[in-house]
Image 1: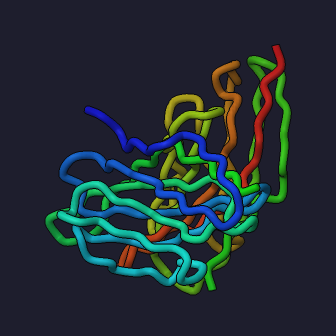
Image 2 (image 1 turned 180 degrees about the vertical axis):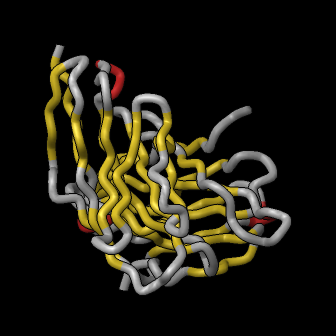
Image 3 (image 1 turned 135 degrees about the vertical axis):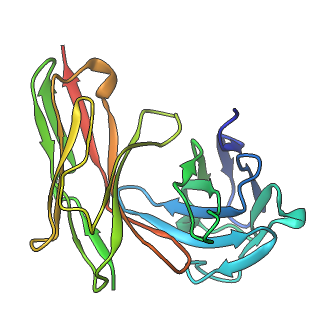
Length: 117
Length: 115
């Protein structure tokens, strides 16, 4: 079974440009999460999808970040325009929903390292 | 607010020896999950071990075990018989049993294994 895959693995862009990160969750996983780790800091929650709906986007830093999950399958995270402080590693994770509706163990991707110069 | 603290940015251990990684957390919830995740360089983050807060027994997974002290809000990871493949970034995390199920992570501990 394929795990959570993220594209690209690395991206270097100039300040002011746009970047789109993609996450393909494990097939059948309704829950999809985006996290970010800034160098040396903790991994911070950005948002949570249940299928195509945003369940919690309390961690999104500002309106330069836009996450979508059309059709409830893969998700994209767009940063427009990118700023220097957006540099970091962006992780995606997915999990199933149990019969009781709770989330099971989350599986993480390898992350996308974004560098804004 | 929920927080997770890992006070050791980096640790080293000799191959075949034992090492303990520290983690403390803070939460107002009575039931929650605690995790240790491992991320080798440029690879996926994988689950090492999970502890459910209502269980008093410490979780173990082969060479990996935890020392869970609920009253002290401490959740350390012990790696026995360390192997070169254990070298990675280790993240301690906490998750609610309800709500959005988001993980609260610590800053991570980089473990080096010396041959």
